[in-house]
Image (cartoon, rainbow, N blue to C red):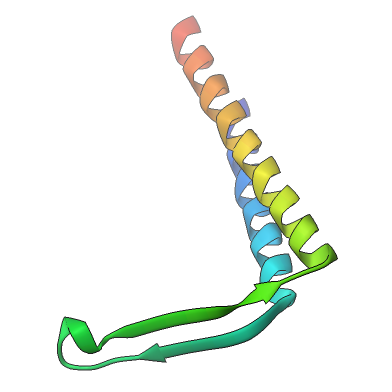
Length: 81
């Protein structure tokens, strides 16, 4: 049960981190579709600088730590029962 809280926190931290990175993004985003695989294009060119990048990356790293904690919590709860 406790691991569900950690997984929810992980998802929230990843979304917050991605939101900060997207909010500070300066660049181009292009999507193109065609009839064959060679003509489908997804291109993302740009940078995120300053506090948006720092807070975004720290939030994503904290989300990874929460994911590891959730997996350890899940494994230990399965071993107890």
